[in-house]
Length: 129
Image (cartoon, rainbow, N blue to C red; front, top):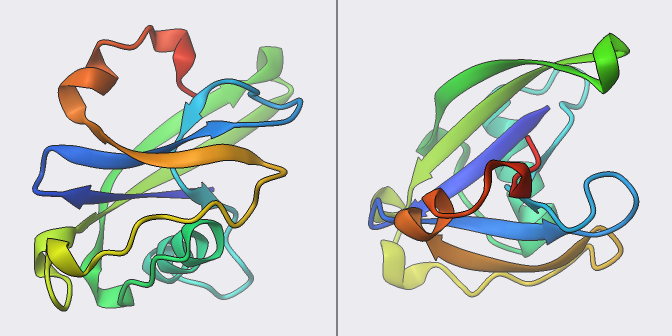
């Protein structure tokens, strides 16, 4: 899947608390699966808009890193593409980013901007990746 992390002033990222049976209670970035023929940046922009209502131009996204994620005792294997968007480069800059809306309340308890040091202080098992 593709996960998007729009950064605000390089010190915050948008995270949500997962809801439901798969990863409930863990923190996650907006994201999801690629649609057929969709590019990574297109997917990141689409997923962010679908989940939070925040619209971003496709060309504002870049690949941050790729992780190799075997899961469920080897029964599933994901390649996860982490995309980032520097909010300072968006039209109107950081000030133009609206507050995130929880547009998928059946999947997420809500979105919040978190400073990176506060995320680093979270236990590793608190993250869904």
